[in-house]
Length: 372
Image 1 (tube, one colour):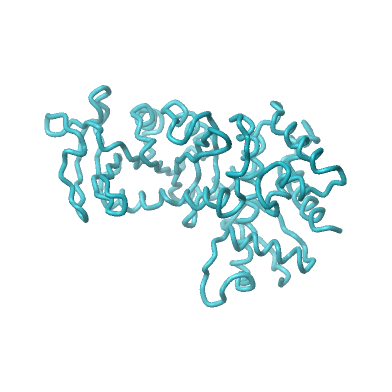
Image 2: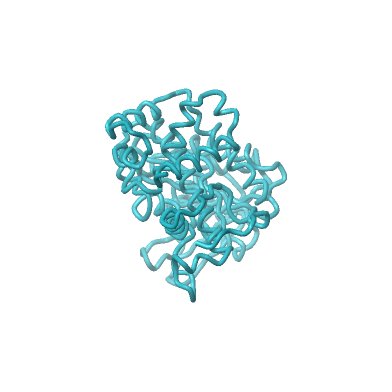
């Protein structure tokens, strides 16, 4: 059996097990999803022709590319309904500790962007929910952000301890007001623009009017944000970014600056995720999709392929086999890269291929693996 068929049958079998309702409602759609998830890890780029070249079907690649176009246009495909049963058990397992929800955007397709909420875990982030839109990076608004976080909340246990982290695009008063009103038990650390006004000691001042020097931080308590909204009270942490030579203001409801510093360091965990699905991994930036709804559907297949490789990388690490594709004295490669190399090794040596989408918390129940 060819490698492409082995990948497809392994993925198809797992998705049938995890998503029985979706298979019953639309078997053709799910077959196409299985084909794409199995092909993406081996495709040289994420154009439809490149993905088609890794599909185990005898049809011409142009026909397989057309098949993908029809799939991405299919309005009956609900990417959230497909993804929810896969990611929910992972979130349930994480609820025993504080769950970081990280917001960020990245450029995608042709003149489009992708807004994503990811869950921080083990120094990286895993996709939780996403929404593509027209325009370049930086065009999301508070309503979109509230919408994605509201859906994220529906996936989490009601008792989950959550902290929301975001860069400069996510300091909207609309988002802050939603967090304080709907989820007052959640914490947040969100960066705002340096020209934002705050009410401090009875006066409205711009944040960049505070003289912050390199290596210095300023902690402001019980202030109100923006002249237009006067939202608060909240706390503001000011520091100077020497690398980019700019002021970094972060608003939070955490009571101590040490807590903010601890949690905000986890915000960049989403950057390896974007790197893995784009230039350092799947080359998603090569996709030429122009319609946001089609990008959303493609991201379903990409997210499942990403979780699969993270699962394989985690299995290789926890069973002591990562040294076969990485250095034996230390780990130089990411879980994603180890998973990709481990998949290649399993295919090369004709070993069974495991498919899973849930990393670390579930490994105690895994049986011993056959050495590869």
